[in-house]
Amino acid sequence: MELLTETYKREISCVLLCFDRLILSGTMPEISYSQGMTKYMYEKGIKIFDYPRFAEPFKETIRANAERIAKENGAEIEFIRKAGVRKESIISEKIEKRGNHPGIVHIISAMEACTTYKPWHNKTTGKTFLKPDTSKCLHYYFYFIDEQVGLGYVRVPTWCPFRLQVYVNGHNLLASEMGKAGIKYTMMDNAFDSLEDVGKAQELSDNISIEKLHRKLDEFAWQFCPVYKDLNLRYHWSVMQVEYATDIVFKKQESLQRIYSELVATAIHTVKPENIATFLGHKLDPRYEGEVGNNYNVRIKGSRIKHTMGSVSIKMYDKFSKILRIETTSNDISFFKHFREVVHRDGTTSHEMAPLKKNIYSLSFLTDNLKASNRRYLEFISAFDNKEVGRKGLRMSLHQKVKTIGTTKGLTFSVSRIYWF
Image 1: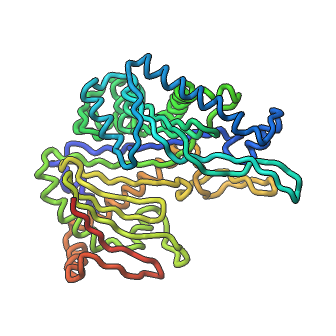
Image 2 (image 1 turned 60 degrees about the horizontal axis):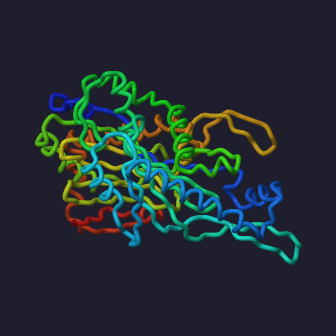
Image 3 (image 1 turned 90 degrees about the vertical axis):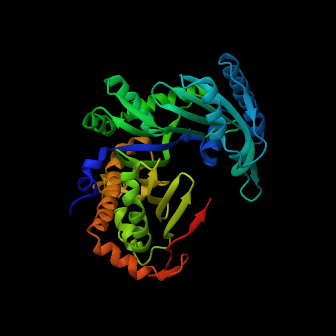
């Protein structure tokens, strides 16, 4: 079967596969759970009921550090009181005024939920320990433009155990590498509009250094959350969310728009739960109890169809009406498997297919899974251009109402939800 990229190769300027959105989490494993924090306090000779007094100075250290960074960079700390404020809009306005040169763009603070611990004494066992708890504390969002990772942010809570959240974009990482390699390019938001050397760009994308990213994350922790040094601990970095995009860049908007409407319309009515599982490298087990379905959105900027299976999804949309983007998103990378060493409870080891670990070094292995997902979806929609398979399914489904909900193998499957903005 001929892929869509071959069928329309004369109208396509380039195809690039690249990480897009990356949200990474930094934790200090020794104190990231209540038992660990309890052990840490006992080892330091700190009474469990003195936990609030123990944590309070660190809050002031983070606050003072934020004020120092703001002063040194001529930035301000903007406190947001109302929920639902789009931080991205605030940052876009700041960049328009200051330009996109490296440095601190802005600092936002907000009261948000955080995980914490509370002292507890069990009268039955006579033991005193910390229990997990949730509360609210002040969080700082340090927005920056970095020479290596581009625009991103670090979210820093002011209360123990200081779980960090870092956002970076894979397209910006690649842009940095291409700049060093002398490859010319143009970008539209977080997508490449043109590439001087597509082959070399793809090679660089396939070999983004996780070690360099790790060092940059440690640098961010040092800069924005220095209290971990006082605790004499180190941050461990894991993957919270990852997006991997296949961008098919058309030379002209009208070339993509001529075929896009049919691709989306056919996908809405032909993609079934078993297809979604196949795209993502799984088989649909009748015992599976998660959500599987399609979601179609029409927006001012374009339209998007999204297929979801639990914590993972694959979507297609027309970015700037010129780029056909197929993108797999995972909020739990252990959904995917690879061949690795597995340590069993009895201490023995074996090599077998096992879920990916969530640490950042799994990104290298995850690339193959996400590439394969996008490829299978591309193959599926390429069959539409053979007309009959896709159009037959479309004709059979056109009599259905826009909103339908059916049951397939005991699964709730949403065929289409349309929202107008």
